Amino acid sequence: MSFERRQTKQIHVGKVAVGGGAPISVQSMTTTKTSDVEGTLQQIYALAAAGCDIVRCTCNEIEAAEGLAQIVPRSPVPIIADIHHQYKMALAALEAGVHGLRLNPGNIRKPEHIKAVAMEARDRNVPIRIGVNGGSLDPALYEKHGGLTAEAMVESALQEIAYFQEVDFDLIKISVKASNVPLMVEAYRQLSAVTNYPLHLGVTEAGPLPNGLIKATAGISTLLLEGIGDTIRYSLTADPVEEARAGRQLLESLGLRERKNVDLIACPSCGRAEIDVIEVANRAMRAFEDKKIPLQIAVMGCVVNGPGEAREADLGIAAGNKRGHLFVKGRNVAVVPESEMVEALVDWATFIHEHGAEAAIARVDTALAEREAAKDRNALLEEKGDDANHSNEKIVEIRKTISGN
Ligand code: SF4
Image (cartoon, rainbow, N blue to C red):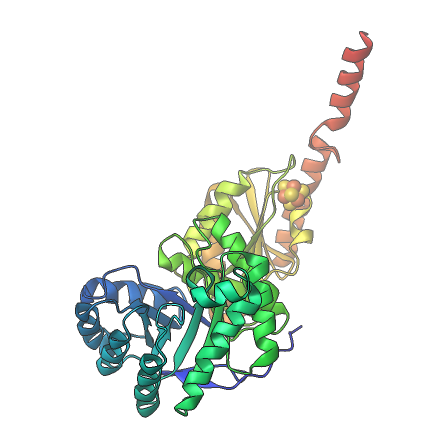
């Protein structure tokens, strides 16, 4: 299943296409001083490894622009310079060779400054994001609209577009971010109805984990599901690598980007669980963290329901009678000691990734594994019955207590 996406004009941020049907890209921003070239590059490499396609660095002082001149040629991904108050920093960043600029129309307001930057970007074929931010909206628009509204943010973006058009510059993408999710959603909806420039989605100042993650996901995915959005950024108060991971995971789970990493599913655990599902699932997450294995892998707490509930997974393991029962595409393939469950998952996942599920199934005696699984399943059912939590027994006891018998 896929979503219909709105057609937008395509631009290029360095080698990354944005809009016009290009894969939705993930962005993040460094938290180092841009003048710290080695520290910034380290963070950029970590972001790229976590799935980030484009990285933004602040360019707030001359030392930052000089840092960019060294960072850009060594970066594995395109670099965008973030500009707030000084238009001259935008010119310096262009001179440093950045692949894109972000201008905040609320902070650079003189038309002649905006046009000077756009002309220079036009001559260098460098795109600019018009980054409207609810928190720094032009006070005149704030007053005109009686506060921070979707209409005010959209008008701010359109004003900036008009300046750019005056100098024949159209390598534009736009964002209208706010920290209030319904407001941000409405602003992007309105914007997408009046322009076909590519849109950069984000909930600004979403905050620390996990709240920030929830807020940003609520706003960004609502719009993506409506076909709106060409590039995204999670603005979290956390290590930026978390932003890149979150962005990547969101796009993979919506089927908007090809899966690169493991999709780990796990049951929520219940009274039937034969292992500490949370602990095993977390260990499995860590074990697969750096492995680029694009499979869906299930960790299930019991053999009674686990294999059935996770039969669509590429690979899974369910606990039963101190053993881990491995299954591939719903078929039992092996039984391993409980203590080796995570290691077994990694081995099997690696094999499947390299040789395919059929080859993995073909190398073992599935009939034997199925018999062993049935044995453990029946033993558990016999021991615990359908009422694994002993709820019925407890209810009888409670009634006795109440009635005083
Ligand atoms: S798989 Fe088993 S342990 Fe996990 S939630 Fe389902 S019944 Fe409970």
